Every structure is written in C-alpha cells, then in structure tokens.
Amino acid sequence: MIYISSPPMEKYSQFVVNAYSPPPRPHHGAGAGAGAGAEEGEDRLSALPDSLCHQIVSLLPATEARRTAFLSRRWRYIWCACPSFDFDEREFHGRPLPLLHRYHSRLNFIRFVDGAVDHRRRFFDDLSVDRFRVSIRFFEELAPHLDQWIAFALEKNVKELSVIAEMKDLIAIAEFFQPFRVPYELPAAVFAARSIQTLDLVFCDLRRVSAAAISLPLLKNLEMVNVHLNDSVLEEILSKCPLLEKISLSLVCGVKNLRISGENLKMAVVLKCSPLSNVTITAPNLESLLFRGKRHSLDKIDVSSCRNLRFLWLQRATNLTDDGLEKIIRRNPKLEVMILSHCSGLKDAFINSPKLWMLVMFKCKHLNSVKILAPSLTALEYSGHMVSFPAVAASAKLDAVIHVDGAEISSRWYGKLRDMCGKLEGCRKLWIKCEHDIDLIIPHDMRKRLLQPQPQLHGLKELKIHVRSGILNLAVLEDGIRWIFPGLRNLYVESDGFTHHFCYYGDVDVGRRRKFVTNSS
Image: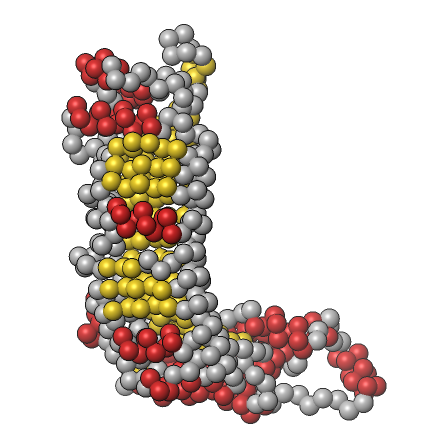
C-alpha cells in the first residue's frame, strides 16, 4: 500500500493540538494582570469582553471560527466557549478534493467536531448552547457520531437545532436515488427536548419516533427536507407544538393525508411531498401559504378554514376550480400576493380582491378568461396560451408582463392579441414576451377588420418587447406594434442580447423617432 503525506493535513493536526489545549489560567491580582498585559503588548482585540467575542465568533461557521484561535492565547479557546456551533463539512473542506483525500478529509472533519464537543464538555461544561448546526453527507458509519453530537446539544438546552444529513442542493437529485440511500434515524430524545425553538431536519428518518414521547412545547419553527415519516407521527408533532409559527415540508416521504393546524401558525410551506393526496389546513391565523404538488399527481388542497392569508402560492393544485378560487379570495380580504401555477381546474377565473397588489398566473392549461377587479394591483404577470381579459380594473401604476405562446397563428389568434392589448392599455408599463416576432405582427389585410369592433389603442405609453428566437425584420415588427399602440412614447425591443430603444414624439403620422441600440448582455 502506498501512503501519501499531505502537508496541509499535518498543519491541521498541529492546529487541533493547539486549539484544544487547556485555556490559560487567569493571573492572580489586578497588578499582575496589568503588568503581564503590558509586557506582552496585548492589543485592543485581546481586551474585548468575552460576551462580545462570543457574539463575533457565533456569527462565523466553524471553519472560520476555529481560525480565531491563532489570534492570541486568549482567543485560542473562545470559539469553543461561544453559544453557537456551526459545523459544515463542505466549508470544512474548502474546495473539491481528489478522491484519494476525500475520505481522510471526512475523518478529519469528524475528529474536529468530536474534539470541539469534548473540549466544550471538559472546560466549559456549565455554559449552555443556543444554536447547534451540523451539515454532513450521511453514511451509516457516521450515525454514532451524530448521536453523540445531538446528545451534547440537548444536554446544553439547545434552542436552535439543525441536523442536515444531506447537502440541500443535492436533494433534487437525491430523490431519484432514494431506494439506494438510507436516511439518518434521528434520536427520539430530540422530540422530547423542551428547550428547542427551531428544528431543521434534512434526510432524517422519523418513522420510529414514539407518539407518546413527543413534547416540543417551545417549538416555533419546523423545517423538514427529504424526511421520512408517516401521517400519525407528523400529526402528533403538530399537536404537541402549541407555539408553532412556521412549518416547511419539502420532499417529505410517507405522508398521504396532511393535516396542518395551529392557532399560532403564520406560515406553511408544502413542496413536492409524496405520496401526498390530500392537504387540509385549518389555521385561522395563517398569513402565508406555499403549496407545490408533484408532477403527474392529483394533489388536493383545502384552505377553506383560512381567513387571514396575505400570500398564497398554489402550484399543481388540481382540485382548484373557479368557484373554489372565488371562495378563497372572498374569505381572505387581506390577500396581497397570489401566484397560481399549473392549476388545470381553472377555466374562467374571477379575481376580486381589494388589497391584492401582485398577481401571477402560469401555465393553467384549461384557462379561457381572467377577469380582474383589484384596485391595488400594481404587478401582473401571465404566462401560457392566449386568454381573454374581459375586464382589468387595477391601479394606474400597473406594470404587466405577458408571456404569449404563439404556437397557433391564425385570425383568431390576432383577434385575441388585439383584445388582450386593449384590456391592458391602461398599464403604466407593458412587457410582452414571445417566441417569434411574427406572433406580434398583425397582417395588413386583417387590420381593417380588427378596427371595426375596436379602434386603435392610444393609452399605452411604454412597451417592452422580448423576442426569444431572434428578429427577422425589425422595421416590420415596429410597424406592427405602432399600429396597435399609436400613442407610444417609448418602445424597447430585446433580442439576441441587444435592446433597440425607439423614442416617439407626436402622432404616428407626423411624429419623429430616435433609435438607440444597446448591448443588454
């Protein structure tokens, strides 16, 4: 076997020896302390009070905090005495390592955390821990170490506990390899910790947690990502958390019927959980709700009990109908932001909300029309096939973004385009995004026919066009846009990384224009 020595690792080993040496004994007598400080030339950094030093170190991850040990003999042990621990394997490595060094670096990280915990127990056992976070890619041999680290945090009455057994940016990929990975089985003692206020779990297994042992009376924030559990365990957790204000469930496995309730709950996030089929939320004081169902699933969500929603994001809520949407809006008069995405049950939506200032509708494939009565609306975005807007009653400061799908170019298409532009004529700014420039160029033989039901639109003053596939004829596109909106003062045409800016003065027939070309990349 060939052994390869690594100078950085040798230097790190020496650091571990220095960092975990006992703290210096305090000097006896004020005069002796002052004299020693003067002789050693102690700087202002060393004169900072312990409370301020702990606060500084607590803001740093462990990889940065440990380096403060080199500042002076006093700082050598301060980072281990601070009330916050943040151990991140990725930050510990610093950069991607060769495969040969990866295993040894992981062992060094484990030794580092073990040493920090042991040092804290030996020399600062009487101090509590406010925050404990550990992030490491889990493998089965690591379980005993994680158990010990968590037990240490619980002994110190930790308030914020984060156990991240999988890198969060790899979770989306990890779900495809779920059968080949074993999650970390979290100790049941975590759910009997009466001091925890924030609990963040990633890639953990809670299926064996006893319902009788659960008691989290101070828990306010709960976040679970790629966690394995079942309906009964989750319901018991929620019922034993009377102060819960925020819950976030992402890629949670094993929950079929999700019931979220709580008098103090302010925010709920449910993202791509499986095999989820029904979600019922009974939280009268809930203010923010974000729900995203999995693709090709039939997730049903019931928010009929909510009365104080301010932010609502529903994606792939298959049971959401026109009547259901109207009831949600009517029962939540404080609603300010609403995002509806891939809600296939919507056909003729009616948005009647007095305080709504932002509305986004994205890829609702069966949608035919959208009627808007929202006097506070200042931001509107629509993406999908062409729909009609029977009425748009919004703020005079409305900025609208429309992503049009021009797959079916016909006389009916141009009629809908003209009608949509007519309803959005009162916008302060309008931004239309399309695939081809031909999508927005109404043929000359159709223009006279379109003028019969409605005249040209003189209200819009500023328009931005974004063409994704390039512009074949800029002059023809400008002429087509100017025919629809002859009252424009500024026209921006973006394509291929360039922005063509046209400024107009006066009427379309007698006006003058200036053209500016800028690189928008």
